[in-house]
Image (cartoon, rainbow, N blue to C red; front, side):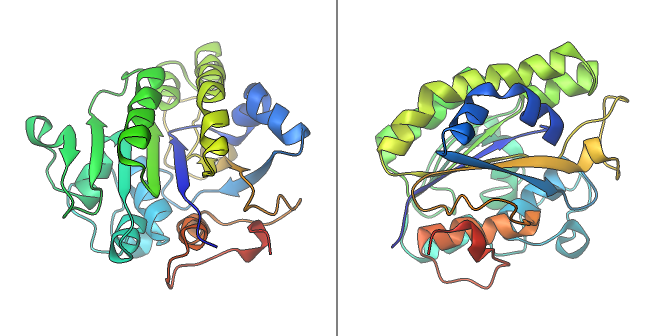
Length: 269
């Protein structure tokens, strides 16, 4: 049975900080309404390469998007392309690099910040271009898109945790408190999304280090969380999950035909 999907990408959120600081999501896990898994990011542990990895299922060394300064459209079939080919409705409230990968490149704010174009892979978008764009505003953007367009696939991509890490580092109150704030903001929206029948994926692209950067192989740079929420998930414990499988996971939930890496253990049989 196909389901609608909300994919929440919290940029720069390390596994341990998510585990320790996101009390609402952990409370849902304790109540049996969500599950938390640990993923290891692909390499390099950089944002734009890992957006492409998460949304196409292809690691950076194969996609060719190997650093953040590569500004071009993706050459691969993304989750948005798969959804559009099946006639589904797509939307994103996201950092502008997502628009550059899947809609139009380069991003022109006057043209692309507010997007409504049925011909594009991401049909409805509210894109931003400042890392400090407030996470609570972003979630309201996402909720506006959900209520207005009733998308089958909605991406919500926040930057404040990553921004705090770049300013203060991994082991800092600023970084941890940014994760706590995002957890609170999500608590305002998750009940409505779940009541509306959405399956919700909450994850990150990469973590952070004490040099206030990322890109390498340190555990705090590569280990990231995956929270699954919704009736279609198995909530099975101790499932090994690869980051390249999340595109296929969302595609399976949407009922799409695809050749992406997949993980059937995460979905209720």
